[in-house]
Length: 231
Image 1 (tube, rainbow, N blue to C red):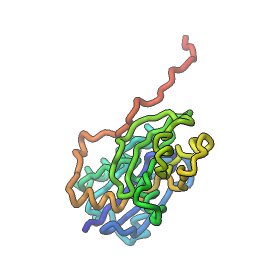
Image 2 (image 1 turned 90 degrees about the horizontal axis):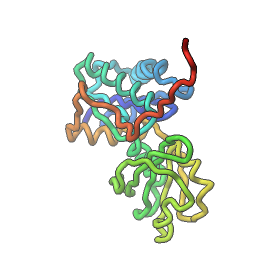
Image 3 (image 1 turned 180 degrees about the horizontal axis):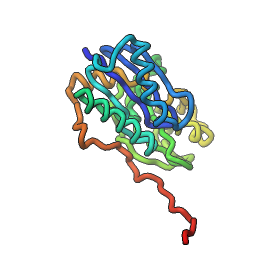
Image 4 (image 1 turned 90 degrees about the vertical axis):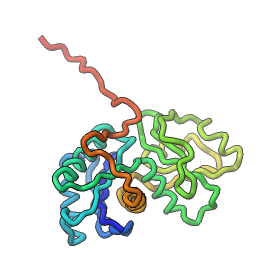
């Protein structure tokens, strides 16, 4: 049993949850997109106050490690690292796609056991970061980048396997698909789906080295070169 502060910062909105033994005690979310730097520590403070707790009472901090937005992930991990350093707390990192999958599995609790889950994080244009999970949360396909086309996942649909797509990358896939075996969930990245995953990681003592852990970008950041000419 552990009191864990969970931080989800992989996409456009960041969120914070305090959970005890996997049960949520308090939750706060950002109100605007890609404003993590300004809001993250304020949300932590609000969440702890909402739960009548102090940061010194927390047993560990869990943070989404990626894939996701380059800047968002760096902001989340650097904030988590700073708190762990200052309070000598262990750090847990949770795969961002597994968080979305956990939310979709929770939402589709009445679905058949054969249903598979496909979390998608937008990676611009028709590309997403994605993976494949069983109804028990087991990873069937490791996180990878994929370009979406009308033929994506056709092999599963031809075998009449139901796939549930979730995350902020899923909506752009919806217009390409007509299969009745494709379901689309409203679940997006959110710290509310982290507690159970974080509790398991804590019990397994899956702590990371605070000094050396880096975000899991999956791909190099999209950096453009300025066209301005300087004299």
